[in-house]
Length: 211
Image (tube, rainbow, N blue to C red):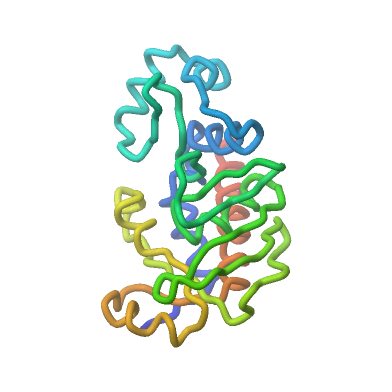
């Protein structure tokens, strides 16, 4: 299993993840974290200063966006739809699509989050606090996170990138899963959080070049 350096991984993730590149996605993350409520499309359109028709035409091209029966947005990365990754932020009980989201979004949102998840193979609980600066109170302390690196932005979707990012209570607990996913890597939760911060920093630097 090849283990590239975090400094090499961050630019690739910053270039390919929609949550670091897409303004609509960033607004969805921010509003769901602030309100903990479904986001009406007209509210998002107003925030983005675009027509609701243009916004909906854009969103339907992003198949992972979650909607309720009334057409309100329920999730994109952060979601109101329950997953195994519970994400408490700003007093709101939310969820994320994958393990890496839990350590990436605190740096993107500049907010502290309490994480409750489970080991992919044993089902045992994994909990910690993620802040823009790092990880605290990790239980168990041996926990690791899997990550499958995208080769193109089109591969950074929920069914590919997110589906390969899980928590494991130890590296040993991940061995059987890694054997079936040889292109994936394992990071300690602290390493993954640092990668999240480096990815956010790189995305911010890239965006500044276009201002």
